[in-house]
Image (cartoon, rainbow, N blue to C red; front, side):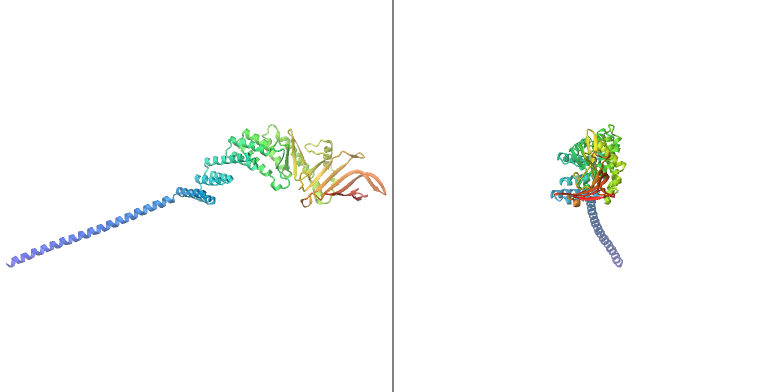
Amino acid sequence: MHEEVKSWGFSDMIEKEIRRKKISEASRERRRKRRKRVVMVEMITVFFFIVAGLAGGIVFLWNMMPEIKIAKQLEAAGEYVQTEDYEGAIASCEEALRIDSKSIKAYRAMAGVYLTQEDWESAEQVLYRGWETTQDESLLQEYCVHLLNDAVADINAQNCTLQTLEKCVMALEEDQVNADGYKLLDACYGRLFMSEDTELFCNGEDSDLCAFNQYLEIMNRMLAIYQANPVEELKAEIIKFAVPANPVLWLDVRHITDYQNLLSQIAAMDEEGQSAQLAACLAKAAWAQDTFEEAFAIFDSGEFAPIKEFMQSEEYISIRDQFIDGTMEYWDGKTYIPVSREKMKLMQEDGHWTFSFADFDDCPHSAGVIKVWGAKQEDAGVQRLCISYEPAAENGEYYPHTTYEFVYLYSNVKIGGEYVPQMNYRFETRVSMPEGTTSYLIGDWGGEHEWVTEY
């Protein structure tokens, strides 16, 4: 009996232990499953965060791509143009170029904004800037087309200037085989040199407005194009522009040497010698300026006595004699020939060039005019000498107008109460006013029998 009870109790313990283990295993399984679910949820959460982050990063990177940023700026520029906010449009285009300085679309867009405003010059500058930066030939072609179209507009509007000519030359510098460019050069020549009396090379009253330096720069650029690509059409235009067919061409005296240098470059390509005659004429004018430099220095000083020695110089007497005899080559005049330091007139007839310096009628703002008088008149077998000088006008007004006249002549000199004819100098000062002229005359000027009268 006792052994059976003991046996039953041991079995019961075993069963309990078995149930406990089962419960424990079940509990562990449940905990394991819970942990697995938690881990799975965490993994899924992390995955979604990663996916979301990647998506955001992709969107961010997409927006950060240069092409997209440029496109947005150009889109903004277009919207600004729609509202006529052109400054905003230009700013957007500039921002696009800061993103990519070689964006061809940005250069075109900016040029388009300027064209919308009819600012042709700025549009051309942008296209050229774009070509310089990108070396894109399409931008260069657009630039040349705009230049030539702009030149055509000027010519058609009868508003052709040296700026118009420069546009044609700029286009040829970039496209030397452009036949339209050479045709427009010819059209510019016809407009610029169409008048008989042209002041294209000088302004007379305001030397700061003189266009000769601009003309010279354009001519040098045309010569450079020809040297790079010696086209016959361009050579013909260069010679025409250098040796215009106008009957009268005004020139600032200070540009004589520059013009001579240009013609010396033209001479090498001028087989017909069209420039040689004009070059010789300018050489004579330069010689005349050098010859009278001493006389101007005397008159500027206000001490006139040395002019007597100048009048007796071989150079002056030679000029006077040639003028009287009509053998003065290239230098024209009638009763006198003027010499001034500001302005000169080049005259052409049938390819023959002559010149004359401006007097006060031609150039009222002259700093002073010398006149060589050439009436053939002998006194006791001696040819009379006469030279006069008119200083600059006072306060820019013609009146009062002063003339100093110096004459070496055969006239009476009062000696010992008697008039004795002999060669002597006479110095007369004439002051002209609208109502008349007053003269102050010194006879035997500088001599021992000097006399004075006023009338």
